[in-house]
Length: 305
Image 1 (cartoon, one colour):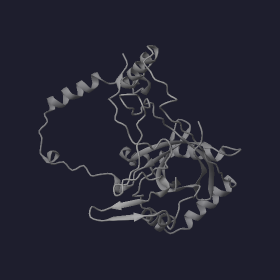
Image 2 (cartoon, helix red, strand yellow):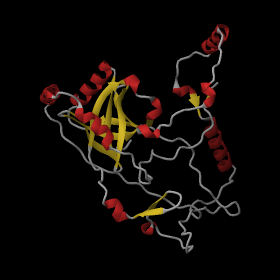
Image 3 (tube, one colour):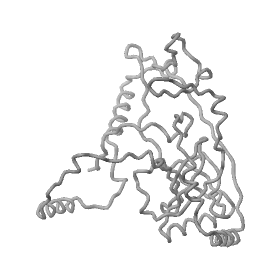
Image 4 (cartoon, helix red, strand yellow):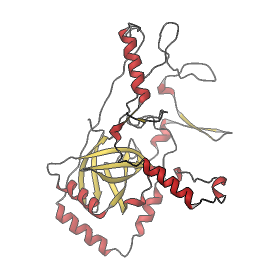
């Protein structure tokens, strides 16, 4: 794996240098659109609807449409906004793990220690495990402020980005307001059915049958010679990466000074303000990492025989 970000977890005066890795990957077969007549690749063009010209990306601005009017946001306008370039994962608070609703979870990242000693990393991991707490953090990735949950999975710290509170819809359905009578017999029968399906969840037991069969279909066509020359119809692409780092304070001294500083405070007046100061970005995220892709529709996974 290749790290996509470097920085440090900070809480109080404790500094834990880490590297960020995408924890998941898409296993879907990559597909392109082609002309059914000759197999030529179909490419999308950015065409202006006013003059009909094809526009180069360098001449494209962003815009917001409220239904009646459109506001054009230029590159200069965007430069006037504060750019998030911090390399710190700031711990806002430690909350009981069961208070973080899974509906808020988005993208998951692994954190690897990025210093000669992993003591601070291990101490934070052990503390989260033994206190059954999850750290709510804020950090900047791709110039956007993110809210995330810092938790433990096996022996690794995992950073799980979260939706902002106003991005989770309320489930208000009139049908659920109606009173429904459920008898004891019905409950027992339902519980009996659940018991007959009881098992320990093992992700490895499940496969995406659609993708497996799609790969088999592709392999069969290749073996039969039912293919065309790629070089004459398809283009190519390339990748890039980024770097940076951080330092560790003396761990015991940092912990001692942080605890003393917190005890000296009369309350947590700054906590509420820190939550309200940030607003999620309303624009698109074209430059996000490879894992922030649009979700793809899949057929339900089936258990292997």
